[in-house]
Image 1 (cartoon, one colour):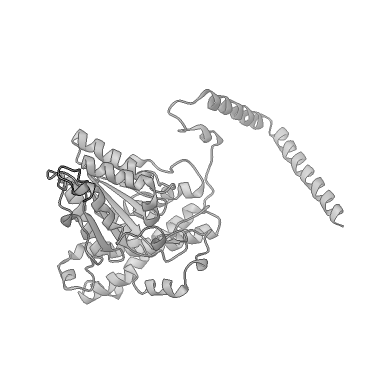
Image 2: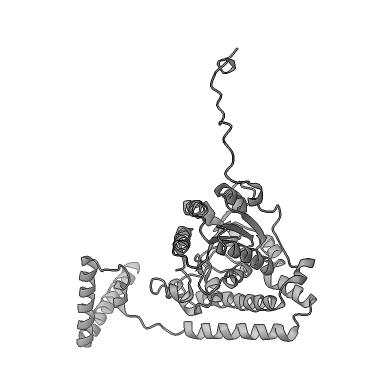
Amino acid sequence: MTVLEQPGSYHPAPPPSWRPRVDAAPLLPDAEPYRLLGTSAARDADPALLKRLYAELVRGRRYNTQTTALTRQGRLAVYPSSTGQEACQVAAALVLQEQDWLFPSYRDTLAAVARGLDPVEALTLLRGDWHTGYDPRERRVAPLCTPLATQLPHAVGLAHAARLKGDDVVVLALVGDGGTSEGDFHEALNFAAVWQAPVVFLVQNNGFAISVPLAKQTAAPSLAHKAVGYGMPGRLVDGNDAVAVHEVLAEAVRRARGGGGPTLVEAVTYRVEAHTNADDDTRYRADSEVEEWREHDPIALLEREMRDQGLLDDTTVEAAREAAERTAADLRARMNEDPVLDPMDLFTHVYAEQTAQLREQAEQLRAELDAAEHDPHEHDQHEHDQHGGDQHEDDQHRGAEQ
């Protein structure tokens, strides 16, 4: 007889009063990504919504191609393209009401533009100018977030504060699959569920965290399954089906607005282009894989459905393309203008109250600018001496080589 078999011995099991806090079954996502396009249910979709989604998808694709071209021309320092993910970006913008907030990551400039943000302002940060590039309160779009997932706790905080104040506000926070490997992701989901904050998390699972595939990030059945561990529903949706993404997000937003708490939505999509213009994606994925996903293009999927329903013809397709081209032309013209920069902006909005060191640096820069303005010849002589010195060094270098 062992110790554990003796009468009155300790048995390492929870007491009978233990029970799950919530039933896990309703929180579990579907086994397959939810989709509408190509099914009979798509016939019930609002025709006006389909037309708006299509127009925004076409405009978004042209926005991506134009912005990528501007990067190659040196007008942007970097651009993370969302080509292939336009359905997620557009749907995220369209499900929100005016008072709601969007919390984007660095790849979500299209979502910000679809929300109504000026395209040039949305690209200001990627241009290397200013701190954010736009007023977040104007369109209820938080600053583009480059560090992975750090915007998520902020989104939860805003949503919780709005709930405490009684404001009718829902927050939609965007993140990539790579961001789900960060601690901020888990902390945000935990606080959101405990506080029942009116926030919706949209994970755009585009297959890669730069060069790291999803299989090397997690062993979970899906990213949507992670929701169950925090006590919120998880939804799995085809991220290239614009109508399905809009429906799932709209349901989650309604739930949050009605006091039902947060939802985690995983949209399965694909990053057709490289991580950024600085990335060589041929080193970690095959061209055949990319081409296979091109066959599941969000614009083509929606266009096929709308043609089948008689909601789209060649004339309306051309009208959407012309409208998108006008947007691209305006973006191209304005981005090709050299910005007027004020060096003193370096010290603007760094802190609510400038530190003594910043004040000292600002005064030093102001004195140098004033001196250059009052004595331009001295400034020109300085430039001449500098370039002359550079030329002398170049001559010496060439002489040494010979």
